[in-house]
Image (cartoon, rainbow, N blue to C red; front, side):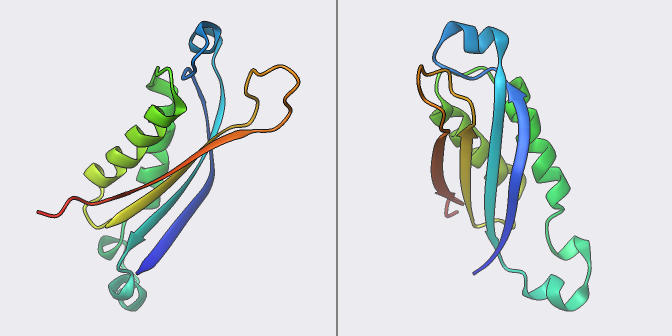
Length: 122
């Protein structure tokens, strides 16, 4: 199956376990992998035959900015589920959500959650 990668989607949001994370906020970075059949748009060169990834980027940014969850796992799952709901051509989605500056003492790394969801069979 073909795949579209959208990497480095950044947004300032208010998801976090600590109360100050939900008040002060922090930056998040999201990478998305979208599985879909790209054979037709590869031939037609028509955006109507694929997905407009600008709308996926806007959806991700909106969810990061407007959501207020305790866990990044919940935010990543919400992003994946929303993409599958909005983009019926996408058969599978992988979301990697990163907190580049998690408020953990003496920790300079980043925390990432990666999850994969598939379109429900109807």
